[in-house]
Image 1 (cartoon, helix red, strand yellow):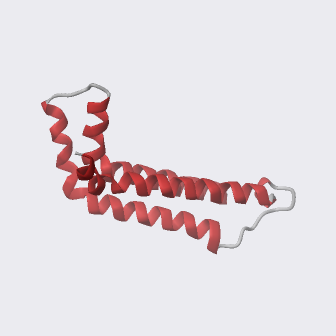
Image 2 (tube, rainbow, N blue to C red):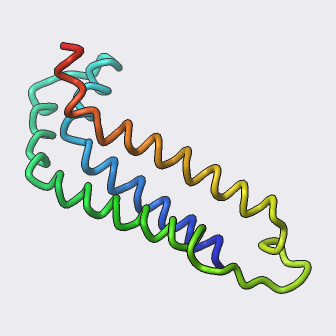
Length: 115
């Protein structure tokens, strides 16, 4: 049960971060793939929603952190969640996702340095 909640929080955080960076990362990725056109500029219409998406990302990452570090794990003996390797793997995945999301969210501030 705890695995689902952590996984759900991480997935929701990733989707919110993608939404937050869609206005800036989206056109850049499309142009790198050779896809262009005037319609790509319409992706910047999401820029006013960026703070909301960042807040949602932080909320879901906070929920995942709370599940992984602050709440005690209640598992039946012999259950998959009783294995300490599973918790360690979940925490590793959590921090990999956090680093990826921080990189994704920082693109709008770092992109002007490259152009």
